[in-house]
Length: 349
Ligand SMILES: Cc1cc2nc3c(=O)[nH]c(=O)nc-3n(C[C@H](O)[C@H](O)[C@H](O)COP(=O)(O)OP(=O)(O)OC[C@H]3O[C@@H](n4cnc5c(N)ncnc54)[C@H](O)[C@@H]3O)c2cc1C
Image (tube, rainbow, N blue to C red; front, side, top):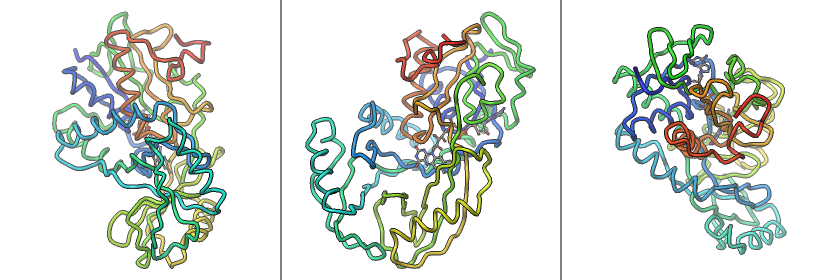
């Protein structure tokens, strides 16, 4: 019997698998490729809401753990996946500059907002009001993470590449059985795929489709991350990842003409140079209306757990949330209400 059966091999499920490794717990992970949010994500981590220059809840704690967590994984799989990189916010007016200074003066924002205005000439971008720099930022190469970590699990015989069929799961008081696998607990980390899960599909996970491009722009000499109405992430050479759109109606992962037009017009607002679209991708973010994760156990079956709702910030929230759920499952450590499915009282604990 293994300690955990994990369903879903995106950021959430893989973070939980890593927690099992770090704590000597045995597990098997079942995943298909029906959702691809983790594979195509921008991968940025940034503690600041750049529209308002305010901080995200628990940002400092999440970043402290993020650094340690991904660096442990890098050592284990022998590949760099976390790339710390400065993030610049282009100012569009003097008023924005002033708002930035005001925000940076607040004690809770000092760790995240530099008070030095960045007066950099970046060929390809016109910025007469210069830039502000957010601190403690970077990106996770999420595709590399998912592929190398899944390969690592596969080599250990811990990965099953198949769709999970919920109807064949047998739940007993202190264990579960699925297709010949006996596990003490099951962790569902299916992203937007939660809608096919009879145990947790009552949770209000809406899903927000996002589209992004890889572009080639030889005249753009950007080496930092730029974030304004879109983010521009330098990938090396003349290539950049640019995104993303937000669509609350379409729940498919098919790139659209509408998404393409929107991205092109937003890129043209920022770039004063030519660019060529190399690829166009789409995925559905597992978003919840209150923008908080969904962690906890099923009201009737305590050994059935959920790790979802990472929304637009899976890179920062993934490790932190997985640890919270792991400590809950192992030691009964209470999950704070704003991370817990207990805030949706109807059927959960
Ligand atoms: C365009 C875009 C840009 C983004 N940019 C960023 C960013 O810059 N920074 C950031 O932090 N986040 C970003 N995100 C959000 C981030 O991608 C998500 O928060 C994160 O990937 C969610 O991970 P997850 O593991 O919960 O879900 P998913 O990535 O959806 O993974 C769920 C996994 O479970 C599998 N699965 C589902 N159902 C079943 C089943 N029945 N059987 C077997 N397997 C199943 C799916 O196939 C998938 O592999 C972005 C998302 C999009 C779409």
